[in-house]
Image 1 (cartoon, helix red, strand yellow):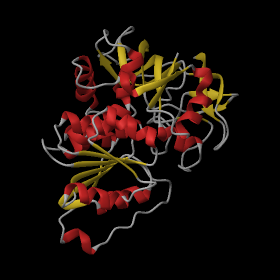
Image 2 (cartoon, rainbow, N blue to C red):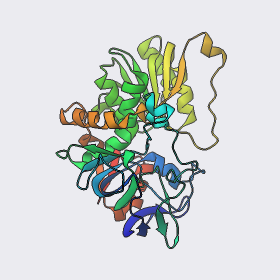
Image 3 (cartoon, rainbow, N blue to C red):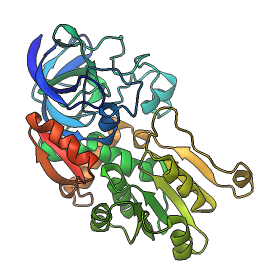
Length: 366
């Protein structure tokens, strides 16, 4: 067991606390990672502000990070102390139906309850009580203990303070385009939300050689970020009807619409913006209990498709190293995503800036 600092939420809608917590050593099949950097993610914000009411507290936030293997549990043969790793919030057993059929993000060997490891424990304590962990990873900390399948070994000549973002926002956004939707060259694409994930959908669309890449957001600074990463058109939905504008730009609607925000209205608008036989890919997670309304009669006749994308349909052992190589070759701009860096002690300020729409992507560096 070690004592370390971590950023945690004691109760919803309260400021983040940075305090000393206890972390158990790795059990069989687990590793302990010294965290170098951890991304500031909207999913964590939803836990902090109470939007996702099923998430228990107190909880250590952070589902996106990278670090160095510090300890290795029994039975771990593919990792050793000193290895560099990007952390994945989707551990996989490698043996269940979904793992062996190429969909490990749906691995059946997961905790039955949120914010715990597969055995139902958290291995973390604060002031003598159970401390929950966000997305398995709990990376807003100095160390974390995780299943070995959640630590994806990478080459050691790339900066962990940059490639940490591959662990969630890059994989989720780029993967939604390349893996989930498999957008063909020349296709028309619209994206709702220009946050960390939405900007990576833009990058994914550019990698796929999409034609028009239209980005919708409510903030002009976010739309400026989107243009930097490859958007050909931007729409401020606070002043302009995005559906009408998209249909005007494309004549028949877009072939692919991606929703990288949890707002249900955005999902409905994206659906309405589709051309016949188009596909709407929902990435963002609405709040607990929220519903989406679409016309039932508009499905069969139009042959439109509504589908989800979970973690960019990632196969992390394949896709994380692939994203690293795209970064090294200059085809994927991760450095440019990071417009603010924070110390762990400043985690509450990081989430204030995220909620205020000031970040393309923020990162906490230990």
